[in-house]
Image (cartoon, rainbow over all chains, first blue to last red; front, side, top):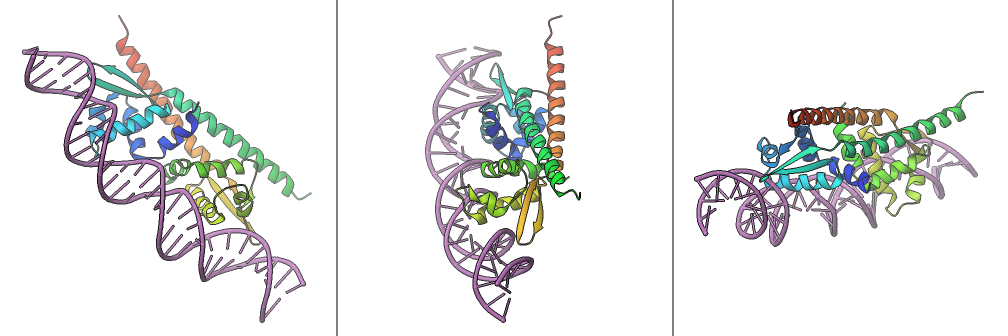
Length: 103
Length: 103
DNA sequence: ACATATAGTAAGTATAGACTTACGGTATGT
DNA sequence: ACATACCGTAAGTCTATACTTACTATATGT
């Protein structure tokens, strides 16, 4: 819930969206994530840190492996924000139509 | 449809989110938007350009005034993306639980 | 105890992009 | 026709941040 802004900053970067896409299929270790990508593994680690701090991703460790997975609660927070924006925008539009309507 | 990425880039900036918040109450002219803010009016224009190109905002002109308003379709595009991510994440989590379940 | 595998951190660089000021463009009113 | 109001664009600056390489940390296996 300090999340909203952090989530949108996190989603603003295309590389982080690429990482999220990889996590759609399920949890992945850092090395696995970095495998298909053009950037270095440390860079991936840094992005994962941002994603985790935003609440979009959760981490679980097994041995030396750090697994990351999409955290649905983070997505929920963002959906709530969008829903508010949406309904406010629709209401504003309705008022506007009302005012402009030829009587 | 070239939107998804553009929308997320647009929402990544806090100043643009501030502008969107102002538009919640209804359409506003550029000068009105810039009024309460610390940055210059040209800066606001530049942000509005980004928002418009992303599809999050629509423009209508009346005289010399350029009115901007939130475009619900743009929000819808983003919601669709989140819903996909969400359901994929849930499905992946379900599979994971299934695998880990003690038999 | 040592080697290996896996990953995070530190420090430095380079670039995208968010600002500014100055200027140009187009309606509207007199 | 001119002045005014409102706005977009151009060009340049400056900072945030996305990268790299080098290093450190921790867990596991022999």
